[in-house]
Image (tube, rainbow, N blue to C red):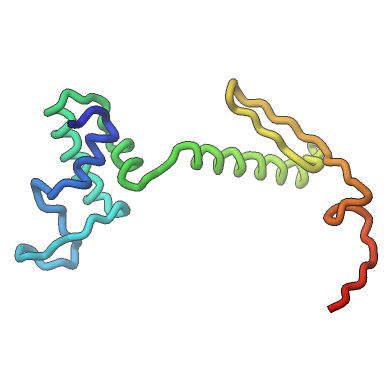
Length: 144
């Protein structure tokens, strides 16, 4: 049975269409043309949204929106989009600081904690002299 909004949309993707998907502009009308669902085609997403909305009304599910439908059919994960936005914002801010000398730029490392709000902390990682990656380079010989 259909129990939530995501399931109402996802169910419509897995069922045989009650109404045919809209054909592309170049496809000939009628016939046995099977149109493959394309999540980047707004007409196809609109069709799924309309079908999901009908199913949601049938089962008493609220809050079926076009945006939610798009997220389900394209498998969009909000956390990934949010993380990308944070990285882009920090990168842009660092570029601005470097270009205008308005503040000291980030030294080495950024830690972002967004669980209870926005908190960032930057610090410089210390180098260990005997570290093979960041320490003092030592000449080594390799015998094969």
